[in-house]
Amino acid sequence: MRDMVNDIERVLVSKEEIAEMVKRLGKQISDDYRGQPLVVLGVLKGGFVFMADLVRAIDTPLELDFIAVSSYGASTKSSGVVQLRKDSDIPLTGKHVLIVEDIIDSGLTLTYLKEMLEARNPLSVKIATAFDKPERRKVPLHVDYSGIVIPDEYVVGYGLDYDSEMRNIPDLCVLKRSVYEK
Ligand code: IMP
Ligand code: MG
Image 1 (cartoon, rainbow, N blue to C red):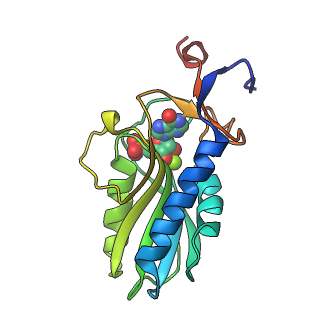
Image 2: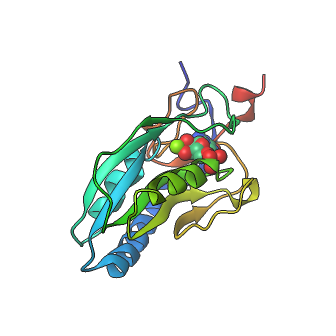
Image 3: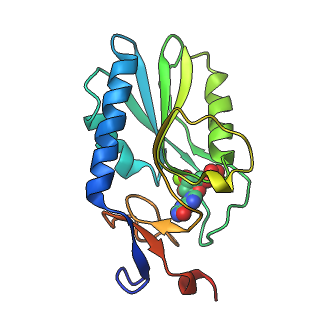
C-alpha cells in the first residue's frame, strides 16, 4: 500500500488552481458548443475526477459516457500499446464529441482514441485534458482544451494514480522518485 503523505514530494497544482482551470475550460466549452449536440466521453479511470468537475462547469445540454483504455499498470512508463477495454454505445453520427482525459503524455492514447471515434462519423472530435506534459510527446497531437501544462514529472492525485492508488488525493502532486526508482 502507498503512503499518501510520505510518498509525495510536493503539491504541483493545488485544488484551488485546478478549480479555476475547470471553470475556465467549462466556460470556453459552453460557448463553443452552445446550441449543438454534444457527447462528452470521459477516459477511465484517470479522467473520472476531471470529468465530474468539468461537466458541471458546462452549462449547455450534453450526453456523457465513459470509455476505458489500458493504463500504465504498476509502472511510470508507457508501454506505447493502447488497448480499448470499455467502449461507449452512444451513436455519434450528427453529434460533436469531446474526449475528456486526465493527462496527455506521449499522446499515443489520444491519437488512438481520436482515430477510433472519427471512424464513427461524428460532426467533430475534440480533446480536453486537465494536465499536459508536452515535453514527453512521441506523436504530434492537437489539444483543443488544455488545462494546465506541467513539467516532465510523474504526478498523482486528481484522478491520476501510481500503482492503482492515490487517485483520491484532491491536489495534483509530484511523486517522490524513490517510490518508483528502486
Ligand atoms: P499517453 O498515451 O502517453 O499520452 O498517456 C496518457 C495516459 O498515461 C494518461 O491517461 C494517464 O493515465 C497516464 N499517465 C501519463 N502521465 C502520468 C503521470 O504523470 N501520472 C499518472 N498517470 C500518467
Ligand atoms: Mg488515463
